[in-house]
Length: 276
Length: 276
Image (cartoon, rainbow over all chains, first blue to last red; front, side, top):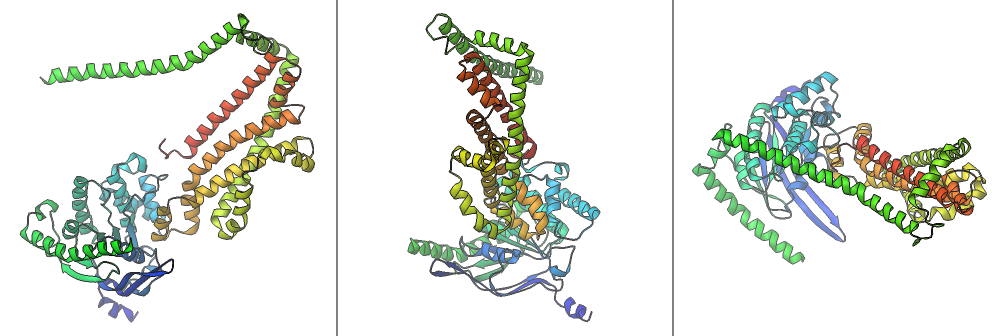
């Protein structure tokens, strides 16, 4: 119990230290991520921005627990999910459709809760709450094939939120949607996060999306992925997705991030040419 | 102005309905009518003597003979017994084969060790024409029902085993990622993710197995049986009762059609989420 005092002094959700991941392909060792260290504060939305192939998704897989073969340490702060049976340490929203087609929306959400020790009533209440939160209250009994792509992604989001994760991981969750739906969903995500006070790691390659959604933006280098820069986004909590785009600061940051990324994209292209 | 639009919509809808109805009618009339035309051509060819009536009795002759046969209580009992014999072998052989195939297929999916030991053998022996094994099966199981059931078991086993294995091993890797990311317990993962994900493939195996079973049963009944539909057809041919042979054929066709409908029923019941 003496720990509670020191715990209170550590209001971070996750501390990454020297994360490194090496893949072995044929005779070659390919370093995907090199020396990534980052502290994610509780309630913070961190966007990870980088050229394709920079190890963004590898990093996410490590945070999600899908890849345990890496070096470095993950410190889950004062509440370690492995001791908390009512919350997941991390829950993931994947880029492509990840709903189970044989389960209706509600059962898809409940399936996400099956690793927690919740009584039936609490689980049902959570499914109900979070489906309502993503605007699918009326579609609890609908099967994925009866829903649109955007709605299926919202089921996946509800499934992740319902686990009340210490860390919500999103791997380009809106990439598969058309641009109008994407804007609407961005606003929805801001609303939902404000309500759930989620801590979020949001992987994207879209600069505008990162600026719209994040409190901080981590820019990664081309392979091996390292942290190149960290930008703080000054727009506050109450954001309007459309109005934001008109702000001069938005344009300025967009250009700055573009310049940071342009070198890296060029590098990636060069690497690909060398490889081929 | 608005009224005009509404009225227009009404007539448009009526026209649309009429078009659909006409297409439906045409489909129905041609679907039934064309085979009838062929029968009429057959009838004419036989009656005019262009076709040999000993080999190609007119459809009406076949019809009359069928009615005569079915009017005789003794014949009716014999045909009934043949149908029952075939069905008994089919159901027992199919049931055992499907059960064994699905069970081993799932076991191979569940355990890599079982898969490594058994899969090469099964894939290597799969192309064996099952009928070629029939003499050997007679040596093993005798001339009675057992050898015939055994060959059905074999045929159905291969179909269902391999399709189950395919379903389990090549299911969407996304499902495994979700299970891992959400820490879904192993039992829940197996019963509510892996098996449903494999079901479409399992059902395909079950359907293929039905066709395989019908081919095998008719063939082995022709070679070595004193009863069953295969024997009925072969026996009619041997005593040169061509109309009776055709009747056997019609019964076999009806069984096949029934089996196909059964397969589709299974598909709809077991995998309602698959968009067809």
